[in-house]
Length: 194
Image 1 (cartoon, rainbow, N blue to C red):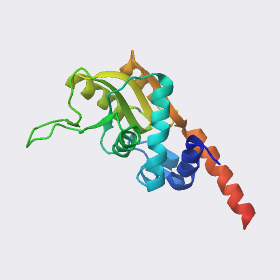
Image 2 (cartoon, helix red, strand yellow):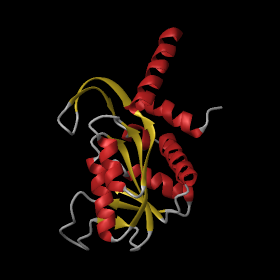
Image 3 (cartoon, rainbow, N blue to C red):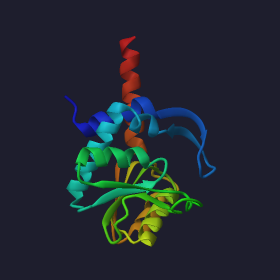
Image 4 (cartoon, one colour):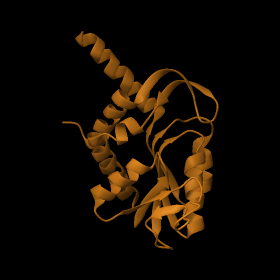
């Protein structure tokens, strides 16, 4: 029986990884694309994401009261961890402050001074993760850790996020190479079965 981490990697490789020619948010072209939402928004993927992120939060020793990140990539991760933990609340960071109602940029958990973990689905340039870190600190949260589901290991994203997160540390659950390698292995198994 696979552990949660290995099962999540297998699901990402099968559901979220695609080869081809793709234009990234940065404008660069890539020969692969990872759409984590096809995994994190699936029933099993949401469950596994919550378990794996919660395990890593405990492993890192982060005493977080809440977890959050920039909408939309962080949304299913936040909900998965909140439900799995039963004790860690969630918040979402809007790309811009809402212009009506309560005019908030941070939705959900609202305790100033609270220890929080910032999450994202994919880190390429790091810009969405950095926006979430900055918004959380501007609100008054204490960022104790930063995590992403998949780090693409390009465009200097990791270094930029580490700089923005300091003194908090940055952890990637998987690298794009991890997902690509698992995708290739699953493809070979599938070919051998036919």
